[in-house]
Picture 1 (cartoon, rainbow, N blue to C red):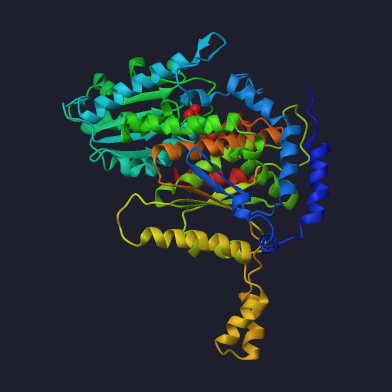
Picture 2 (cartoon, rainbow, N blue to C red):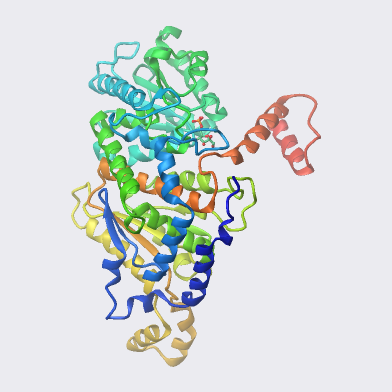
Length: 552
Ligand code: F6P
């Protein structure tokens, strides 16, 4: 069914008119009128343990009304119902999208296409629980009779970024003496650096791959297998089952690799790679923090699912965040969003969101195949505060592009070091205030005059020391970085991405764009060593291949 082009819809056009009327109102102005309801109360809400302050955005109540009308016109509510019900909303792959079922209770039971989804999900969770319990207690022994001390998760994309990010975020909950490692890069340095640190007798490899065909993961898995057999004193092929487990949807691939299916933790094609940390792809998380904490993580995400499903659009956190993103991307033409976690353990969260958002909505074709005439996903990037402040925040404050920022912080710390948490939060709040207010010429001049600077000095420095401000941000606060709050935070962004995909009219659940590079790389791999030297590429690629052929 053809989809009405977004830019032709009545609500989009109404937003355009509204944008023209308010685009020159600065955030400072919006905060100014004393008579208006305080923006903090007006534009903030809490759900599933996450508090969102979105007052520092270029919006008025009228803006939000227009944006909610857009969400309604694009049928966000019925599309949301379709996703949760297991309809095949991933139309290019003819698949349901049911990562929400991975964190839902067993009842009410969900079934699709003859599969008892809830029962299958909970059966696998039970297996994860048993395995994690055995490994963490020391009952699961390596081939030499020693317990496991090191877990190496081999995967890439969603089979790496999710478990890696979550394990880091839940660092204080990790079992002492159990060390987690993540290998994703086909660059042998990645695997080599980990193998230097571990002992074959006490290492478990988790081969995590939805398809079990991903070239990088398969090469790393084979290298790990060879290393184990070559370096494990007395290790036999039959010992592999104590040191290699698989997480996948592809039982044939796992068996062909030599992993016993009883050592395989399955999931299903209705789980997208970047939405898979809730599935058995989260095995490394359960091993690191224990099954009870992993369950709390799932429960937190489920709480956000319930909020997303039931809250009216006007009080729906993922919907609000999605709409703000669309407001900036399609009206203000802001092309990137920076993620600034003010929590060291969320250091991998920006990379995680890069895949979640850009692989999902980095699309230029609508569901019906037509080319979109509006911009979609912005570039997502970032790093932990306060490090970013001393690197790229200069551009955020005074650069020629405006980049909305998501500040993410916890009120309490997981450490006991005095003074640090207050300093961290002070920086976080100061940055969002500075982005919003800036510092105008008059303020800078007064400041310099008070310091006794001459008129010439002031005139020369004034433009450099002036901050335009009017740079929007969200602030997300949690009480602490608990498993449940982390689950809710991730689910919040997942649903934000979903709502944006619905409004833009794209399929957020395929990733055909990744394929071209994979095919070309596999062709060039053969050409790097085969004869004759290839001449079929462009001169640049031919030249680079020729140089590598001499070196390899
Ligand atoms: O990069 C493409 C991609 O398919 C991602 O979507 C996915 O998360 C990643 O590769 C890894 O895939 P797999 O889990 O099948 O190895």
